Length: 462
Image (tube, rainbow, N blue to C red; front, side, top):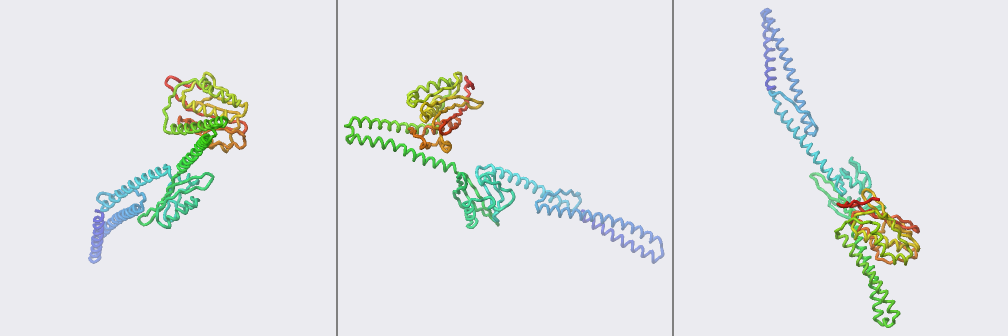
């Protein structure tokens, strides 16, 4: 034991000092030099013992200071080098316990850091915006999605949340939570060129001696838009259904009230009823088609010669093209083959060609062309018609949407669902559709069909 050893060394020094003093005293009293010499030897031995004692004490003091530093580091959660103490040292037990405590603290710290890193990774990858604000109104964490939603880079350093948030409605919601210490939820509207709606929850979280506020924001703009589209669809469908039904009902009642006795009026009214019936049937069929597409369809893909397929489909447009004085040109090379579902391709082609003829000018042209790349083959339907204004192109595929034709005298009948059906069908088969148009020049619709590899047939990309 070091302490016992030091105590023994101190006792030895004291005894040697007393013995040396006693021998000196005897030597002086008896005038005997032998006692003086012996006292000198004892003093020399005493000096050596003092030096050894001093070295032992310094080593012990150094170890105590190291233990103090290590203890302070553990309290402050700072890293500290382990202490290696001799087995006979009385402080070895303390040093070993501190070494074990330091090791456990490092392991726990590493585990906590790993858990925090995993938590931050999870929060950063969430599709919702998350921000944590402490009781002093400072942001202590915000994930990437929150930065995207707020449209600004959020600093990782602690800073006031008002530095990041500029939306008055969101600021008011957070302030209410700070004032009332109660969680709140609200739909927050963004202010800017593009309207965005966030389902926002501001959660008041009470801690042991403090609290913080958690802001969670989820973009529900798509949900709001879908709800609005459903409302618009029902409203527009009701309006479109009401027109032919009202006409059929009105002319039928007129005939029953006596107009049927006039043969000229009878024939004229029956023609109108027949037209409105066809319009009504087309509308119902288009609505059913959209519902059928959305509920899923089994596609029967098979190889077909695209040039001959287009020619066979164009036979049904002879009466329409002759009445409108429009020429349709099939510019697809005869050797081109594609793998496609004929029902889907037929419906897409008919809608695009029908529109190209209806909205064309007298003596105009409709051109049908083909291109391909490594992933898609393209069907191009272009016309020399009235064209589409740029403001209308973005809404062209909305259900029941019709472009403004006030600058043209051309009135075209239809359900307003044709291009919506085309878009639904193209999306269903994994393709895309693009439009390029200029007023007074014409329009080009390009449908990108994904290349479907058949076991026995590979498309010719021309």
